[in-house]
Length: 170
Image (cartoon, rainbow, N blue to C red; front, side, top):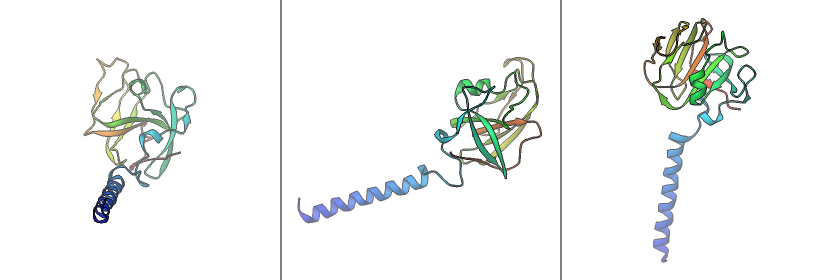
């Protein structure tokens, strides 16, 4: 290969590597002030009565909460059904792998809950106050999000702190 062509090919490779690095920084790099990647959520197994789930710490506004994580479909569907509260946790964090528009129901949940919805960057996009419902999914009202969200946090009524969500990676 002649030296001019080698220089041109080398320059093109460096240019492509630079573009890829800038793209990664803009789109894929974890952000110190944003949420942790979904795969990083959870610091270990949850305590009873949430055996089989994971637990995590999140910060909402200026308050740190210890939460149980529902990050697959079956866990999200089960939620807090049949439970008076999320004890020994401050709440339940529903984690979706992509933006979601799924509504929530209080079917089988015996106590009122507050629900805060957050986008993928942890910005709060809505709040819902949900009433208990002894019925099933077909007879209980649905609570719909105002727009797509990535994380939903349920706490006991009146216990939801104000502010955005920050996940604490472990």
